[in-house]
Structure formats: structure tokens, C-alpha cells
Image 1 (cartoon, rainbow, N blue to C red):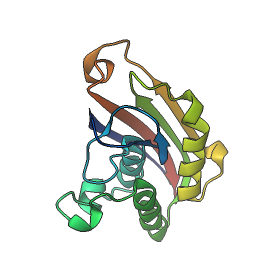
Image 2: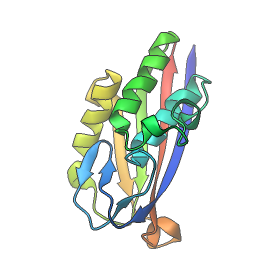
Image 3: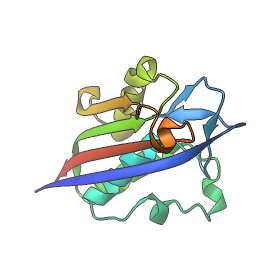
Image 4: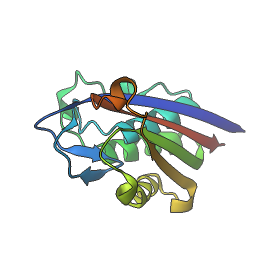
Length: 157
């Protein structure tokens, strides 16, 4: 049995926060606002995995009303999600994600993001794709107000 999942996340850009995407700290003048480290890429990946397994979303498992998740590293949350997926007997076949950000340029960090996701999920890096795109100055991402990410995955049992 194969199952497909889709995840989407968005966070606002603000001063005084680190910019972390795919578990990589990226030098930038602003970072993402959130209860955890606000890593939109890993949040979208987690939601895709949970969705494929029909297990809800990250808000169910790591609510922003729970102080134990304040400042949490999304890499650790992703490891937990993968553990939940594996407990249900699923195997992750692949993950494909896209980050929507006007800036900064993400191409120098893509391989490290892929490796982090693969490491968290116990996958070969060849099973993980990460891409980045701008929205040509359109919308909230194009206006540099926030960053968004989409992810899809295939799992099997």
C-alpha cells in the first residue's frame, strides 16, 4: 500500500530571530517567527508525513500552547514524527519539498538541508529533494513578509 502526503507551512519574517530552514542556520537580517525554531521547511515535511499516515498534523502532536515545545529544534520534532510513522509500520519512500522565499538565496544551503532531512528520517540523501524558488516579488513571500514551504512524500506499508 502506497500513500501520498502533502504539507504546507508559512511563518512571518521578523527581526531578532535566526533564520533556520531544513535544520540549517542561514545568515540573514531577519528570521522566522514561531513557537519553535519556526523551520517552515521541516514543518511542511512533518505535515506531509503525518498526512500520508492519516495521523493529523504537527499542531496535534506539538501544540504551540505547550511550553515544552517553545524554541524546539524542528530537527528533533522531525525525528519524533518519523518515529511515529515507523511505529505504524510505514516506510518513507521519498520526500520532495519546495521553499518559497524572495531572499536570501538558498542554493548554497540546499545540500545541507537534504542531508539533514535524510538524517532525521533515516533515509538516503537521494530520497530527499529540496528546491527553492522566489515568487517574482508577488504575494507575501515576494514582498519579503514571510517564507512558505510545500512538501510531498510517498510512504508505504
